[in-house]
Length: 435
Image (tube, rainbow, N blue to C red; front, side, top):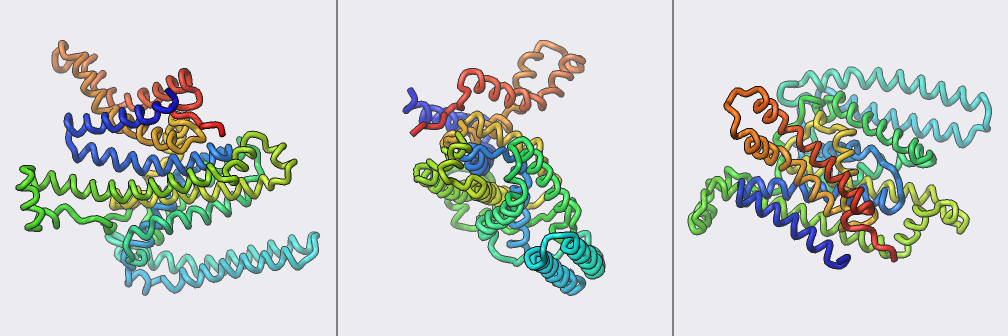
């Protein structure tokens, strides 16, 4: 049964997606499928951290938000007026900040330990803070005052958005390295608190630094890596194709665009899966599992546990950053307010736990299963409530209450799936294979 379990479970998931296509619409089925692909990539990133090394990262949404921010900075065209108003001030502030870091490192390394070194480093921080804010604040005010209804930020580089997927992973990896250098020496429960707090800080920064990503005013109209529906509907060859198939050109254009997205997302998922499986089966993967299972024994054998934890933390965060950039690409907009660390981090954790921690195929299955029911639980719940209360007259208080409560069924369904999995398959639907 173990060898056939994974194909059977994946066949059930794809059967459910086909059922949505026949019962509701193929456009909706493909929209769910695309989000399932992104969820699977994100679950793979968390599985690398938790399943390979046992790192308890509760800051998933922070790294996903960094990927989304990178999509904006790569693809959105630069706002010339904003750059003219305050771009030079931002660049000078960045240079001064880097010089401050260099001065602190120099003082820390060259001066002997003692109170004098502490005083000098504190003085560098205070002076640098005052100087940077003196340059930074007027520049930010000038940028955010430049046509705030439409822009009010510096914009990006105007490059194809697909480049941001790789760069989003690089940015998330860089931030993860900084976080890991500080927090990976902590105990697992402290690490969870630290990553959650840092995730909140990242998202709060993106919400409030309007000059960078417009904050809560959101960035809309990001360019696509696939055609636009309206352009397809105006193309003669596409209309002829739709007429040959006997389908509506509007519906067909929506399906075609989603299929294009699906091809790109599936390619990324397969690449990440192949790299993850290759790493897991390598001596490096065996070393990581040994560290996860017994850190004391691994340390006694000469393995640098902290360095390996930092390595795996950076790799997993990079994959999550890629998924975050893909999600922003699919949405066509960047909305910092939609990143809710506790809510959606919990959802990704459920994907990994239900699918099977330590098994990459299990993480993918969990991503598909949990996101499918997260989306479809509400319409299924409405249908169920309508069926149950069909005999009651319209306006009945109980009927209205049940119909209004249908939207909350998604939490009940996801929680029920988690409980049933923990009871009957505590190692996940596709458990880790011990080699």
